[in-house]
Image (cartoon, rainbow, N blue to C red; front, side):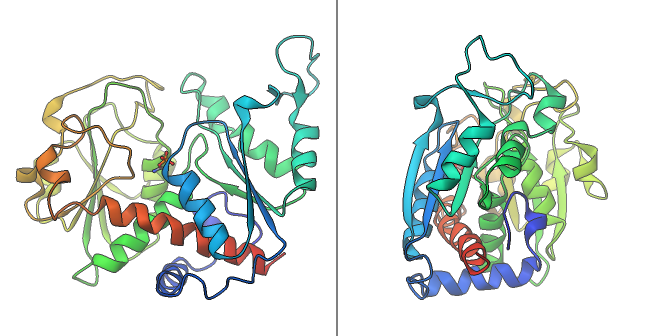
Amino acid sequence: MKKYTNIYDIDNIPEMIQEAIQLKEKPFAYKNLGTNKTLVMLFFNASLRTRLSTEKAAKNLGMEVMVLNVNDAWDLEFEDGTIMNFNTSEHVKEAAQVISQYSNIIAVRAFPSLIDKEKDASELILNSFIKYATVPIVNMESATMHPLQSLADAITIEELKMTKKPKVVLSWAPHPKALPQAVANSFVAMMKNIDVDFSITHPKGYELNPEITMNVSIHYNQKEALKDADFVYTKNWSSYTDYGKVISEDIDWMMTKDKLNGAKFMHCLPVRRNVVVEDAVLDSEASVVIQQANNRTYAAQIVLKKILENL
Ligand code: CP
């Protein structure tokens, strides 16, 4: 594997999931693979799970890890040809090449602005590192995608499914803040590439990018959509059409134990209790969010392993 910026960088997704499950059984089986190799993790935004699970994954493979909170460094310029006499101090052209001197793999987290739809869609930060770095890039959540999360989600479904082709529903939930569509986008892309009966439910106005949801059934009636579901992935995202706006905080869309009706509850975390999902779900056996979070390590580890094997 040359990079992992979206799930399409995986040659064979079902095989990758199985290999991740095997790694989970023997996490130190390749502890020499990363000897004398360094992962640099760049955070433009906050993180708990991604930061710790990716570091743990790298260390399980014997890598050194360095973390840079980019906001503590020089303000970076991303536009070409800019006269840099304002706030930015260093161009990404130099920064990406310099960071490449210290690393064998660079992982980047850079959220969208949720203001400029076209700029967010262009993935300027992630693509600048892909363009100017001289080492492989891993996406730790970009403007539009969170492929490490969706790989962990697919691993979790594979581990827990009771039928060959489980019914999986992505259900929008209310949230007071405007959140990115990245987790939902990557989850949809992943579900389209594994053997599940997949659908999405959300209020009108919360349609995701139609290029991503093409051929997926979308329901505006949550109750009907959730009928007979095996897994319910609950997630807020801001409007894609009315870009970045919170157009509904309808608490009727919060996930409850009644609505789940025996299905497994999934969420990427962090999650707002009694806004996105009621306590009775999170505190019950139906919730698999901790298993999902644990699987973030093995999703990252299989990705880093594949990249290290290709260096
Ligand atoms: N799910 C997830 O990416 O969590 P963090 O934002 O804490 O990394």
